[in-house]
Length: 342
Ligand SMILES: NC(=O)c1ccc[n+]([C@@H]2O[C@H](COP(=O)([O-])OP(=O)(O)OC[C@H]3O[C@@H](n4cnc5c(N)ncnc54)[C@H](O)[C@@H]3O)[C@@H](O)[C@H]2O)c1
Image 1 (cartoon, rainbow, N blue to C red):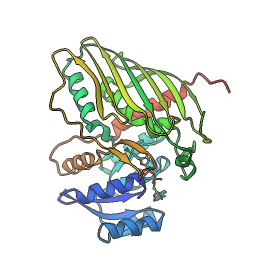
Image 2: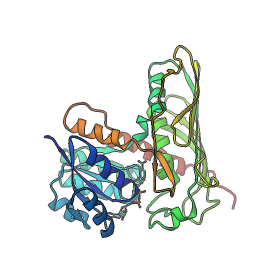
Image 3: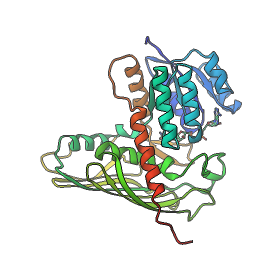
Image 4: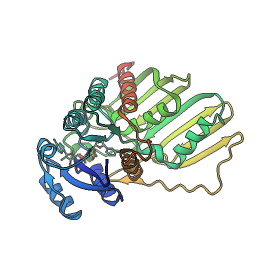
């Protein structure tokens, strides 16, 4: 592939607008097409970034635009059909998390990539957070010794308007559940560190919102490496996000990554690996116009790696065969519900 790598963004909403800004600022990338069913968003972003060609039809964009990569930033339920259509048109794909709503769909996406000889890459920007990358180093170097347990809390606020004002959030069919939206980042990281989820049991309930999906849940997990896990999630926290955290209990160390979005190290006691003194916690959250805050905004690093990968400079992207592991784990967690009294 030759520079600049040509991108299209489909879905110019909360996160699509971040993809647009990041591609625009990437040295070896160019934004050649925008697609959304909302013409107002197309006009806004096209004029902001220099009259980028716009399309209200995804099929038309695939037919007519000159692009190498399609960034899929639409609601979860559209990730699989749009990825498959883009791959069938010979386009590489960078799909937002969650990759899909079922492992069957994720399998079909991977197969479409292989059939058409294009890459299916998945956004996992939290892997670049400073505390997360440092923890990965500690784990990979064996400094923590045998890992016994990981505790994960995703305790966030999503106000009623977050669901009410969206055509797809809160819908069982289009969003699937909070594990797909808020928690999939955290599940990906635990799998990256400890291997596939091989056992799960869960409880979920809808306690504070008028929605079809759960807003509170907890699960006990076992990972391939034998690590025992506990996962607690809520979108019912009062007023604002409280915490997105991991605590790792190992033979030779304890780590707690905390902050609201995995942006701080709250505790670090690792044998022969002290916390570097000059560490800079630089990760910023994705902030959606004061409405709510998500996890880190390291999308610039994701796009940077996609460009470097397609230019054959290095290979650090997360591909479909990794993305599918999170979907499989989510299906397992939802599939093992113990029931919750009404
Ligand atoms: N990596 C992250 O941290 C992160 C953060 C936010 C969202 N996301 C993911 O990105 C996706 C979108 O989330 P969002 O918050 O931006 O949602 P959003 O509702 O703000 O944006 C979705 C956009 O898709 C457009 N759209 C819907 N149907 C379409 C179609 N058929 N063709 C073209 N455009 C269409 C909508 O008009 C809207 O502009 C979700 O899957 C979400 O999980 C990831």
